[in-house]
Image (cartoon, rainbow, N blue to C red; front, side, top):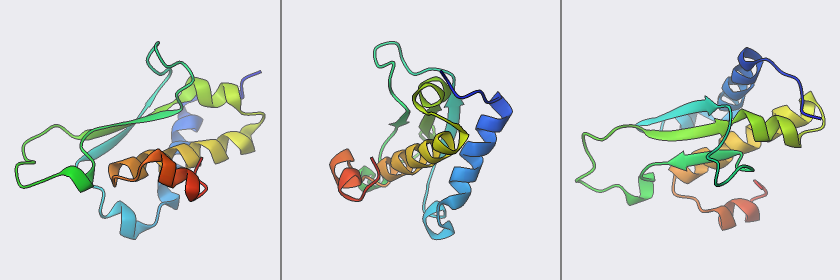
Amino acid sequence: MPVEISDDEFDACVEDALDQVPDELLDLVDNCVVLVEDEPPPDDPGLLGLYEGVPLTERDSHYAGVLPDRIFIYRGPLTRMCEDRDDLVDEITITVVHEIAHHFGIEDERLHELGWG
């Protein structure tokens, strides 16, 4: 059974997760927005989050005048996979950190090694 949480409460959990990222790292995030969506693309229904953009490690002198990178956090799969609100808050935090790490060019394998699922 999904964790019951209002859209506003979920958004606040995402904001709280962003607040847990050290300021020194958030200050380095460049041209990137975080968006909450109800569901991921139909071809990947279990996706918890997604980073779309050009990681900082791949940007060069030609990177200019582009739309912001986007980090999506998907409410549906997160609420369905968690047993309770505390579990949901933890998973939201892990997902936010995971996607921010992709913005910095850190791949899934390295994130797993560091314990960030």
